[in-house]
Length: 455
Ligand code: UD1
Ligand code: MG
Image (cartoon, rainbow, N blue to C red; front, side):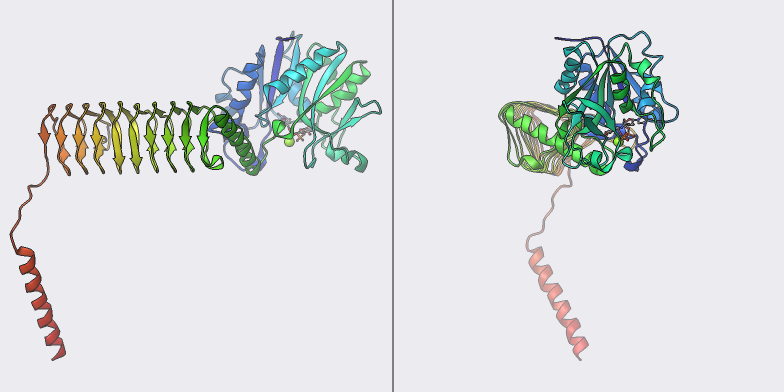
């Protein structure tokens, strides 16, 4: 049953000291996108009617990335209970559910959120749903203390727990769903009389029991509630994200020769029968169509690679590179903001930037578009079927007409007409027998010098 009147409260006021970073913790990217945005995407899928972001430390940065969230500031951080208390005014009149999430737990799946909401509505008496999990190392997580009938009695923070309580393996992920009609009345009853001197959100469990309401527990997998507190956690979150993404790619009909060495962005789009060789990195904004091969050690961002094209090995595609159907980009080629039509070949050692290249043109080894004069960028246009000889410098703005030929080693500064030949290099001169004569003379000079020293 869908329950649509949900307010999501996302806590992100903590300092994140252990990241040792000038960037706010929730803005560190995983899969090329800030953690916070991963979480907000799932909240959007939940169709929450309100999205409230609680900010404090480093709030300017977080606010700037908050998309369409309502912002509430928690000026001083007095604990998770306090962080929810500060949303009281913003949520006055909200009678639906409140789901509390952490900005640094970005990968909580939609179905887990949904299971929590459903658990709240299974029994009208249920006032709180707690998301528990059983981590491999329970460490310093809060522990869920159950009674004899298996119901959650209270949550005890590690700092405040007895040895026996610390031995409990069912832990608090921190995420909870509340009956929003009562939440703030309950919050008024918590105190900061504990080992940290903080207002614990977790104290609401006992308060709700006293109010004669019920508490439910939903269990999640550890990977679903992975929190990021340090750079090591960030690396772990990235590894989890990549593994999920790789599996999805393979499920969707992509061959990854060595999945562990393929790196995706959150938005990488791949067609069917794409083959990706080892060591390929996708930055944000890439679309790869059906039947494409990306050869080993290529770096691709912001680019589109159309049907049946082949890229790499060791190729670099930068933003707004558009590689046409069946085109071939070879080794040590860099392409930026350039549209290559069907069947274009740039096979070796080239830089193509700010360019348009017509169908089936062949760009010889070492060709460079000189697109920048130190101040401004200029465009190179190459017509279909043109042949650009190796080691050509195309000094933009310049155009080469369809079917034209450019001689190897040319520095092209003027437009070339369609079907014309352009050669722009020093004329070759030659003298018959010169080399042989030169060798003979020099050898004789060297021998004379040696004799002089020996004398
Ligand atoms: C909290 C839980 C603990 C649980 C653990 C899971 C409480 C009292 N404890 O502990 O049971 O096992 O999370 O990770 O709730 N925050 C604010 N304002 C504050 C304090 C925190 O916005 O005043 C935010 C932080 O930015 C963070 C989240 O709330 O995103 C959790 O805070 P943290 O201090 O890490 O809580 P823990 O002590 O780890
Ligand atoms: Mg924590």
